[in-house]
Amino acid sequence: MAQVDSSLDATIRQAAQLVLAAEYVTALTGAGISVESGIPPFRGPGGLWTKYGEPPMDGYQRFLQDPKKAWEERLAPTGAGQEMRETIARAAPNPGHTAFVKLEEMGVLRWLITQNVDNLHRRAGSRNVLEIHGNSTLVRCLNCTARFPTAVISFEVLPPRCLQCDGILKNDTVAFGEPIPGDVLEQCWRAVEHCDCMIVAGTSATVTPAAYFPMQVRERGGTLIEVNLYESEITPFCTVSLRGASGEVLDKLAQAVWTLQTTRS
Ligand SMILES: [Zn+2]
Image (cartoon, rainbow, N blue to C red):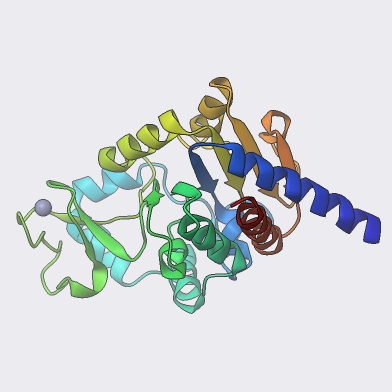
């Protein structure tokens, strides 16, 4: 056990050195980060969709065809929708989320791209967050892309309307068949373009467009640091792979970066 720990510590130190050697560090996170906050993944054992079945692949088209009906269903959710809503309401950020806040506050992490919709990165205190699959606590105007907290919107008349332009509001979470919101995607690409070190945590990065980001960094000669319980499709492309619970490993990584940064200056 002691040997396993010391080899993890050595790998964490190596990762911390890579982070500090880089000019522009970003992170990409996925469901694995939120599992320790009690949020189940969608797929795989214990996954919401494994339990309730996959949502319709044409969810976005259904919304556009009948926004009123889509909102009626959304406001009285059943199955996976209901369980997800209750779980997110109960969940709190874990040390993995906090580690990214620390890295940002140290001036090390520039942007955090997440596939999670649970709002936990923002609740933890991260500021530069790009939510490519949206945020389940927000609604978004289909006309002008303005976003509002769901709590400030009136649902007396459905579908609810934009406070700025009266356009139809949709929940911000990206549905199947819905394009990733252009403003977010554009910011992601801008971040990836400058990035020379990406921390890929809690995701196997197999779903596009997220899958393109680490590969782009890699192709341009940047380093990839993986934090995951298991080997995944992205492991062979990573400079360093840190195996373990993301909360524990990321916390150690943030500590190691802080220690190195402090002793250097
Ligand atoms: Zn609008």
